[in-house]
Image 1 (cartoon, rainbow, N blue to C red):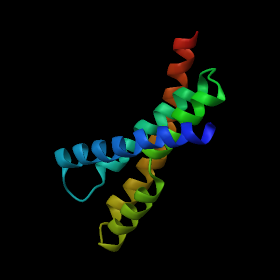
Image 2 (cartoon, rainbow, N blue to C red):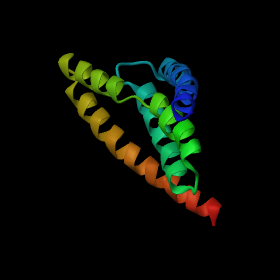
Image 3 (cartoon, rainbow, N blue to C red):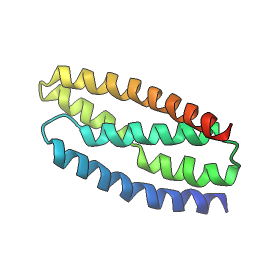
Length: 120
């Protein structure tokens, strides 16, 4: 049952990631991967929120592992950062790496704080 919930969450998160990534990137264009940065930070915030709530394993399997796992993408982040560096855009590559790590951590903390605020 757990594996099915993870698969269902992933089936929702993967197309959501693609659509959000394309929508953000279409608005900003350029070489910097704004779409990937956005979905990774948003997914980190959601996972931080979920992790701080008193939710059971079923909800975490679906939303945490499945949805957030498919919504966020470390492989695309790594590929895009490497591509920037190889294309000579070293400063954007460094900013993408630093911004993704710092933004993801900050978003997860904010998500956890928000969960604490709503759960009392």
